[in-house]
Length: 126
Image 1 (cartoon, rainbow, N blue to C red):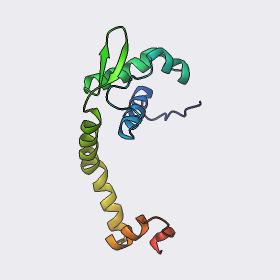
Image 2 (image 1 turned 120 degrees about the horizontal axis):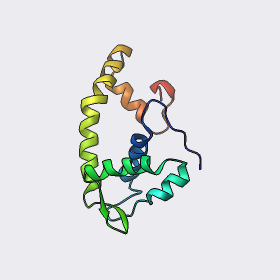
Image 3 (image 1 turned 45 degrees about the vertical axis):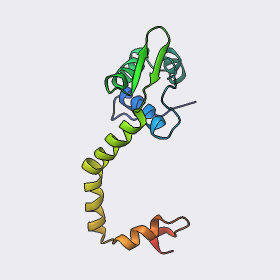
Image 4 (image 1 turned 120 degrees about the vertical axis):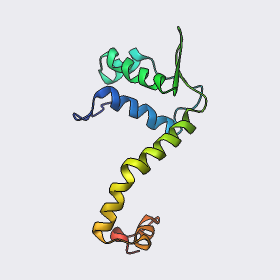
């Protein structure tokens, strides 16, 4: 499996975000083991130190716990904690830019809601 890494962000951060995404998507649940550092390093052709750094950030955020000698495991409540922090980050960092773009384009809420409906035509004219 080939993975494209973004040159603008450190790889360890991108790897961490992939793991976070897997948690948010329900692919990794509380109690699930993360793949070993060596396994991830070999699979993605990364330095094991890079993988360890990504995993350590997850430990520092109490999303993953180290179990000496057996690996890393998703902590209880990690998904809920991630949802809370990601929602707050979205509202604080991403939403204001979206609101400004919506305002600049002269869109209204009805257009946006129509465009979000399954099967909506491009441009929101369903």
